[in-house]
Amino acid sequence: MAYHCPRCNAPVRRGSSTAAGIAGGAVGALIFAAFGPFKCKQCGPIAKTEFSPQVRRKMMNGSIAMVAFAIVLLIGVVALLAYVLRW
Image (cartoon, rainbow, N blue to C red; front, side):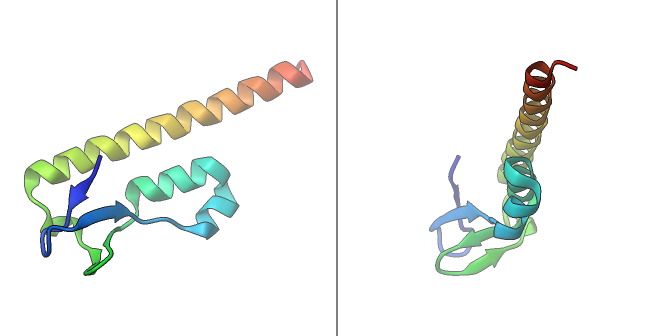
C-alpha cells in the first residue's frame, strides 16, 4: 500500500533497519517496519501526525497486519522446528 507525502505528494516508504533484521531476523525486520518511521525520498522522515486521520488509520491497519504476519511466521518456524526435531 503506497502512501503519499503530505508535503510534496511523492511516494512514502516505511523505514527499514539492517540492525533489526540482523538481530531479529525476518520477525525483527517486520516489527521494525510496522512501527518504524515513514520516509520520503525528497523530504526525508515524515511524522505520522502529518498524515490525515484516514491515512493514519490505514497505516495502523497495515502495521497490525505486519505484526500479525510476524507472529504467524514465528509460530510457523517454531512448529516446523518442533516437527523436525520431534519434541
